[in-house]
Amino acid sequence: MSAYYGTRLLTQRPFGIFAPSEKVELWQTGRKKSMMDFHQSALREDQEGGTSDEPIELDIDRLYALLYGWVDGISAADAFENRLIDEQELRDLTREVYHRTLKQRGYIVPDTKPEHFIVRPKNGGLARDRNGKVLYALVDFELLRRTRAYEKLYRRAQRAKYWSLLKRRDDEPLAERESLNPNVVFGIHYMFGAATNQGRLWVAGRQPDLFDYFDPSRWRKTPRIMLSEKTFRTRSSDHIEIVYRRSRVGMKPQHDPASQEGRRAREFGFNSPFEEVAIAEELRALGLATVYPRGIYRTAHESLPAEWLTDDSRYDSHAEMFAPDGKPLLQRNHDYYSLWGYWRGIDPIQGYSEDEHWGMVDAEQAFDEGLLKEKEYHDLISTTYRRLAAIGFRRPIRNDRIVLFLKNGMPIKDSRGLHDVTICINGYRAIEKNLLGLDEYNRLLESTREQLRSFGYEPLSLKGDHLLFSMSPDGVLKRNEQGGIFTVICNFEQIRAPWMGY
Image (cartoon, rainbow, N blue to C red; front, side, top):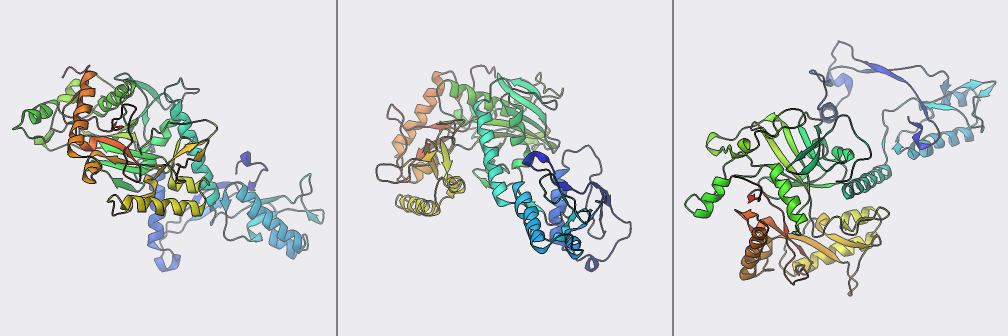
């Protein structure tokens, strides 16, 4: 193990794994198929994107032997039997190995036995270091696993690094990475490279270290929540909230061809994910609130829409655009996903500081990171549920949708002593819960259309679920400085930009 954590820890040197050709009956191995399936899945996922055409697979009917270099010495248990160490020192040494040295490195072993570490006899006693401590080597790792404390600290460190990188997203990178290439598309900077599953990934910005956070291995297999037919949100393995949407580029919009509006939307088609990202960034630069694009993922497998659904307009307009690997930027036989930050009622960069927590945190994270005590957390959840029920929310929302505002790294409370909380809601839900009257809802849609047009952008199919609002648990929608409802645009599939010649 690495000496990164302080005192060096000696272990066996692994040489290889041997599997005899003979097969045995399942009852002879004592294995369970469900456990083998779990390990098989983990092994397969780890090898995704590798260069081998024949990845390693576990065979439930085969025995496996691990080959290690020999560690000269005897077990601590044998040393005790040979009176080279007394009982108290053996207890202290066992505690040192398992409860201090391993935990310091973020590991735990449920089966703490002195048989599992080797000591070396010397001059009628045991070999010791300059400080008089017994030298030992750990030789058993079957039950080794990470501690919960380590996992919690690791997730927090990953999130802190992530937000720090996002803050500097468009700055010149401090270091480069050979496997990644810069790629500018429609004025937006990306880091481009191969994903671990052989797909292709464009991560918005110039920071190579952001790339790993959006590798599909981090978010495609984590539990997801469907937001719409093509849109999902998930919490990645780094505990980063991500919204991903399958692009409908290359598919003909299914609008009513009998109406003029429907015909124009059908003729325009769906934007490519690269156009969506560019439009979102441009609109925010112009002062309109939008969700934050994170990147674009192209699958390795091939997929084509039905012939009658096909629209070639974007493949034609992107025909002269290529990725750094020399292949067309937009390929008709692959699926594309646009990746977005999960907007939860507050700008995620608001209040960010390198030395403190960022300006927002959901209830679960606040409790997990000690910003809320257990009683405070449960009181917050129950109080929020009661307030929501009073305005017509009969089903409890997920706790990670309850977002707290922070100041100086701690949750803010209002004049009533209640935590200042915001919840994201879209236009459809707002009118469904009578938080908006029909007239105000229609005025809001038209006002958003007019804002877009004033900057030269044409919304061909703007809908209520394309707009997000920030709502208090009492149903009060956040207002802007002009008194209008604060609105965030979250869909850019059918917005024509001024630079589009189609």
